[in-house]
Amino acid sequence: MTGSGIYLEAMIRESQKHGFSNYRVAGVPAGNIPSLKDRPQTEGACVFFESESLNFPVTGMSDVMPYKSSLFKDLKGGRLTSYKSAFTHVLEDAVNQFNPDIIHTNHLFLLSALVKKLFPTIPIVATCHGTELRQYNNCPHLRRFVKRYCRGLDKIIALTNDQKRNIHRLYGIPLNQIIVVGGGYDQTMFTRSPKSPAGTVHILYAGKFNRSKGVPWLLRSLTKIEHHDWHLHMAGSGKGQEYNHCIDLAEKLGRKVTNHGYVTHHQLSGLMKKAHVQVLPSFFEGLPLVLFEGLASGCRIITTELSGFDEIFGNASRETIDLIQLPPLETIDRPYRKDEAQLEDALCQRILDMMAVVRNSPDVVDPQAEKIASHYTWPRIFQRTLSVYRDAVDQKTGSAPPGQRKGRGGAALY
Image (cartoon, rainbow, N blue to C red; front, side, top):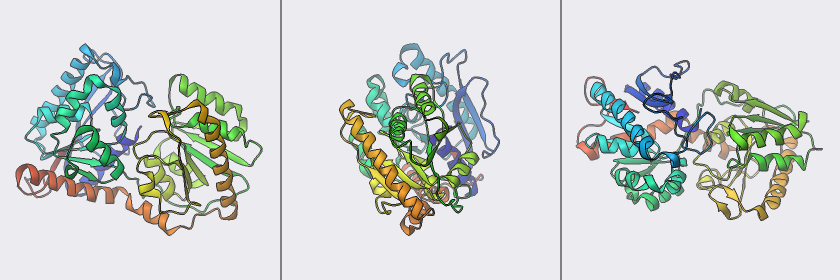
């Protein structure tokens, strides 16, 4: 239900195309074994939260998740001990049973550190998705353990060069151990269809319904231009007061807004084919895959100029991708109150400007945008990831890379 989960499934699917055998380890709520429908068939095991051994919800890499979750900042004492114990038990069983050539972990945080501590002789690659850098700053009680063992990981995959520099600064990991690969999208699902001539301009927001994603900012901005001919589609979910606040603001706009709730990737693909404009006014991101999905679906994009965004999207036309520069923030994901009115006015104007572009030309014609999208398909992401795997194994063992070892033709434990 999140970007890193989609990434995990995509990596397994692509690796199978290259002859890898895989073993997936995931933490899930008790009694909620992930459905295998539309997912790559592979071996695996689950660590169950809300169970006798882990009597609290799944720990979320963001403080607000689209499902019931707990906070890493509250993972202390007995909770922390039981967390490490539960994952240690399942991981050791998995490694003993599966005998992997390489382990690929997600998030440069507690679990990656634990994996490195448990299996120091196995090549380990970790992908940084960005949200863990916020957790690293917010959880000083975990920082020493995380930093100690993450510094020993064989290779780190980063989403952008900006993120690579942040990892180096926070963790002290040498820059030559951090490889920029990026995140991807399913190019078979997210494809273009002709956009309808714009009487009503269809605007899409896809993501969590919370403050850090800028959803209240977006909804308050649209209130100021309510008399214009637009319709907002909201796809996502959330929980708690922030979610309720977003829903209240959306309801005030009445029929101008359709709340689709949580949608599958197939449903999201349909919404993106219909939408003229995708808006992501977030205050904090790693690298949101929805922007690549929207771009590949022919959406024009309005988003904030966050870390790494100009590096990736900056060469596209401003009539295709409009990056909004943020003022200094009070916290990592909250603007100063004094700047909120100015932000709303700026977003209003960007939306009005993009609506004018859409009415003149509903379909995007921008070779640079197409080039950006083609660079971030899952097959191309995995080709770059496979190169990282080979370097990690060579660095660790000096032997042949995965895909050329053992009878099973390469094995990865995720």
